[in-house]
Length: 143
Image (cartoon, rainbow, N blue to C red; front, side):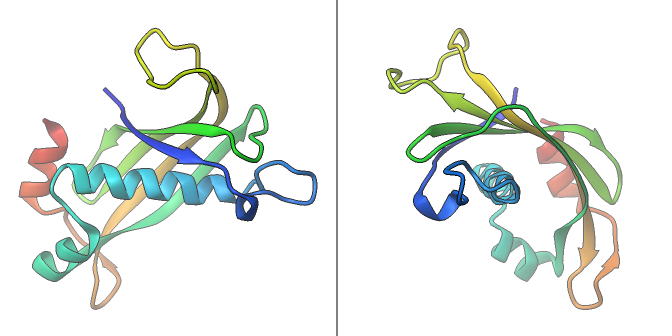
């Protein structure tokens, strides 16, 4: 089951053409991943303070399908597709939430705007060198 995070498109997110600037989807995906980890009890700052490590993006592959516009409501998802000892691959989607809907349900018709495969690696924060993901975090991610 994918984690879902709501996002609204503001002026700052759009380009001169009136659509979401392509790089801003990376920001939306980052926020969803951060909130997903927080929902599991792993705030990024606390995680770094307690373990001495942190996740860094090591790769990103995006595909754009349709544009989003000012005031659109999006649902951004995050789901682990691969789990290694020092890295994760997260599949993410930005979906357009129809304006007339107040709630997203499994039967809701959502339009795919952008999809991404984001690889994140765990590093020792002091030296920025790859390290193993802490066991407690890996166990929580598996459940």
